[in-house]
Image (cartoon, one colour):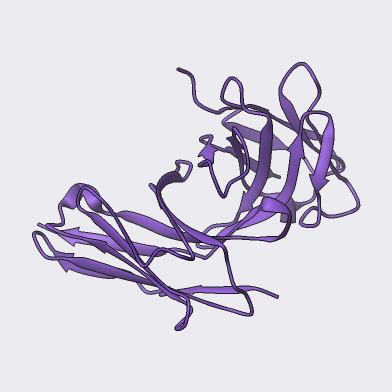
Amino acid sequence: NAGVMQNPRHLVRRRGQEARLRCSPVKGHSHVYWYRQLPEEGLKFMVYLQKENIIDESGMPKERFSAEFPKEGPSILRIQQVVRGDSAAYFCASSSGQLSHSEAFFGQGTRLTVV
Amino acid sequence: SQKIEQNSEALNIQEGKTATLTCNYTNYSPAYLQWYRQDPGRGPVFLLLIRENEKEKRKERLKVTFDTTLKQSLFHITASQPADSATYLCALDGPDDKIIFGKGTRLHILP
């Protein structure tokens, strides 16, 4: 059984470039969450998606950031015109249903470095 | 807004002893609380979930308590081992079924 797969594991981008982070949830899971983590900091919620729908994007900056979870294929977190402050670890999690009744499975994260 | 507090200082415990980690929260009445383990460079791994109507939950050497009056959860690891060394994250249910994490407590089990 494959867990949550994130790729790439490491991503280096120059300022102004675009970063695309991919997340394949556990097979059969329809709930996807994206979190961002800075060194020595906790996980900060960014966005919660179900298939083809954004449920809650309250933690995601309105500009430059977008997320999708299409009917087919992985969830994508897209950061346009990256800046140094975007450097962080981005984690994706998936669950089979509501988190009050099912656990969240996390991927190993994508470490984005903006140079 | 909801605030989750975990001891930011690392906790050093002698092997074989019980490690106890604390999670306090304010401005919220969560329906459930979760604990995760995170190793360096890895994603969090779910350990336990405890609901508001449960006082205590156990899983092997792990025990979690949930006191909704004190707004506190305690996470215990009994007979601790060096392999238990990691960062432990407390998480509460947030609005719209997302989970909100504390910053975590680093635990070092000393051989």
